[in-house]
Length: 146
Image (cartoon, rainbow, N blue to C red; front, side, top):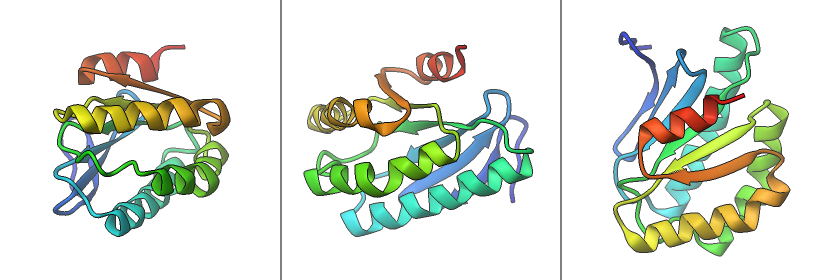
């Protein structure tokens, strides 16, 4: 795995880069472009595997998530995707001690509406907190606060 001074690259393809930032104990998902729904689901499964591997490698530390959605398309968080995340993915996040998931707002207003809809319909049942921010600095500050 490639390492830089700040973070360790966990996965990288045309749609998504995942990296672990040990300074904030966080896996960051950087969406590079709009992604088809089937590919989105596959990438979330890859993320789940990286969460488990990262926690094992770093002695089961609490790992939070930041999703940089600046380049994500407006049709990503469909109701079907939201239902799948709520039913299948969130319980796995909670089992792996995810406490917070921050989103960095998209450049696409419609995408932001779908992210806000996802957060508002999922937050109460997710088993962890989600919030949306306009900058990486704000997202990092929130996921690391006690």
